[in-house]
Length: 335
Image (cartoon, rainbow, N blue to C red; front, side):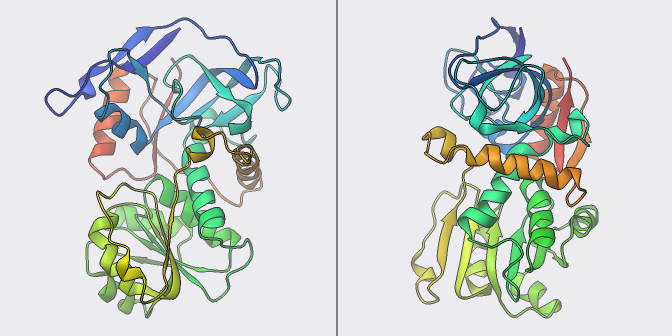
């Protein structure tokens, strides 16, 4: 089968040209695995991080978002059958979705939304899982609840921010504030449902004051947490909650004490990485997200379609993601 893999370490600080087409044998499904024929994928920051950190001698297939069709199932599979159209993000420790066929545990998979084409659906799994887990599992927000609370989303125009803004504005009673620094990204956040949009390139306190907000109860810091950390602490109300998904080199949590602030990390690969007892929660939440798409409560976060799944197009996608200026998700479709 055709696959695109990272084949060399970053000797000069850049190994994007080493995303290369290779040929691999088609794997066989056993246990709770599905063998999926991949139809569309999207590219996430985790792809660029794993690629940049690659040090091995064995090529590694990246990709943690896919839409496809089940070709065969392992002997313990109960949730799917051959021919099912599915979507998923998969597991970090296994071969990724940048290949014609992929093995994935059924507990991480759901039936794709009926009302979306493959490309539009491929934009969502990883970011939807991340946003859902962050909002409902980590921050403890209740569906239909949290009236009077305010959620500040830093980096609301990115992949996770785009879907988190929708989930929070449509499924909770919170006031949702999204940050974005350019006119086109600010408009994207407004269209996702944010009640207010502020500019994270300006002092946070000033921007919140401009919209009449003195403090927020919840923060979702999706990018540049180190840069904004002190300002976020200052913006949070006593006993507030701060969640993050990025990778700051270090964080001093001592300043959280005076306000009794709580810190919550969201990493959507935790359940699959440790095969937690509730690993099937990702099947369940992706099923719920598909229903929300099909009843038009939320919409795809596809930003740009880069064409077929080729080495050249994946290289282009990695370069764009590393600018930090992507709006929505970058999707590729078909081999």
